[in-house]
Image 1 (cartoon, one colour):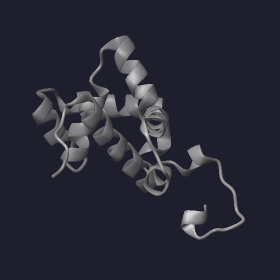
Image 2 (image 1 turned 30 degrees about the horizontal axis):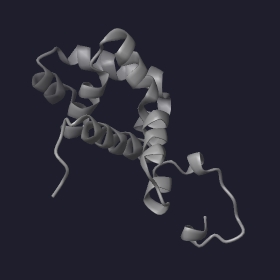
Image 3 (image 1 turned 180 degrees about the vertical axis):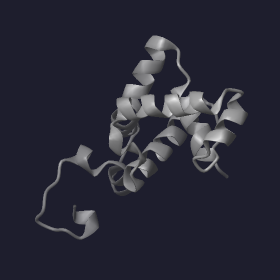
Image 4 (image 1 turned 90 degrees about the vertical axis):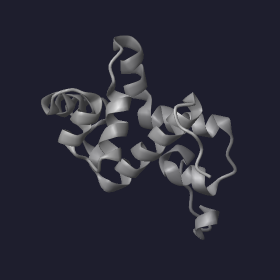
Length: 123
C-alpha cells in the first residue's frame, strides 16, 4: 500500500491480484500464487480431463474474443468454443470477462505459457 501512496492502510497481499506482482518485490512463489489464484481451476480441470480450455482462451484472446476465428484456428465448430468458454465461466466464476479480471486472466495465460515454454519472451 505504501508503493501506492496509501500510508497507514493495510490490504492482504493476495487481494491485490496482478498489482502485487507489479508493485512488490516478487519471486517464483508470488508468481506461482498469482497463477494458481487466477488459472488454478482451469489447470486442475485440464489435468484431470485433458481438455483444451487454456489453449481455447489463448486463441480467444488473440482473436479479440471472436468465436468464429477461434474456432477456425482450433479446427472446431464455433459452438464448441462457446461451450468451452461457458465451462471457463463455471470454473473461474462469472466475473472472468469483466475488464479488470480479464486483464489478470490474459496476463496469467501469458505467464503460464512463458513458464511452460510455449511462447518466447518479448524482446
